[in-house]
Length: 88
Image: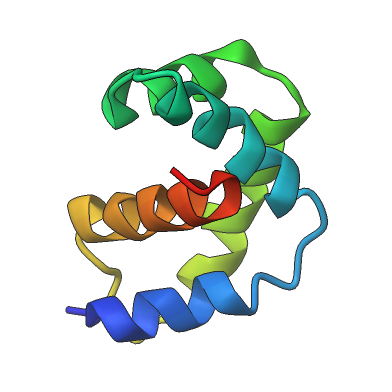
C-alpha cells in the first residue's frame, strides 16, 4: 500500500492542468463549512471541468504507484490540498 508521503508526492507533481480549479471548487465549500465528503461528491457529480480534471488525475496517477493507495488515504491527501489552497 502506498504511504501518505508517496501520495502527497503525486499531488505535489500532478502533471495535469486544472488541479488548482479542483482544489478551489472543493476548498471553497470546505471554507463555507461543508464536510469534505459532501463537497467532494458535489464536485464529482457536477460533471464540470474540475470533475473531469479529477478523473484524469486519478487515471494518470494510478500508474505512478506500484500498489494502488487506499481510497481513504488518497482522498485524505486531496482534502489536505484543497484546505491548503483556500487557507481553510
